[in-house]
Image (cartoon, rainbow, N blue to C red):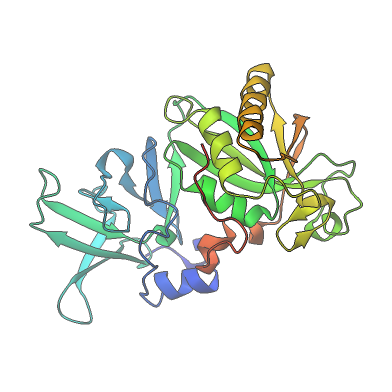
Length: 286
């Protein structure tokens, strides 16, 4: 068993699932649709549990794997006597359940795992690119980008201001010049900047000039921080398309700026709290 000092401190919802054997709601988890090369680790003790090549789309609402890393996962009869529970063999953290005979893959096995029990580590040798978006409260912005196939990592933070190492409390005063942002690291062979930019526009009110929804203030403005001229051309073309559709676009196109990470309790907020965004609702536009 992993020693207690090596275990990660868990949020209330993580504790509910990992220690109290709860279940996250179907289709809400961060890793339902991910398909990038890498490994899925135990959220509590960071032990590698599953390979990305063993993940498959079962459309059941939870990440599904038809194999595990040898010796990483332990099986035990569930308390209800009807299913087989799977836990991390190193720390005993609850993962989900395992099912046989469903015919999804040639191995005829499905590890049905809660996303909240896992942490994905991307393979180091795959291509990577970074995009930076601001669309109001960074919790909701991150929620949508984190679930995109081909997105390797998301980090919430601040950009565009004049204060170094700003805290959330400082940014909330509206005096530091920063915008709440999400840094999106992605594999450009799986998802491109144009697709991410379209999702950005489709998940917030890009016509609002004073914030986003009920979050009012300069830190909540809509903006894309551009890394290069190609990104500028893509963003400008999408704005022209939105204008033709009758929208008055308030989104600012800014030059790339230094990105400062927000405090840890802001990262993956909605996934850790088992909530959904209150002002970032997807609607198809393009």
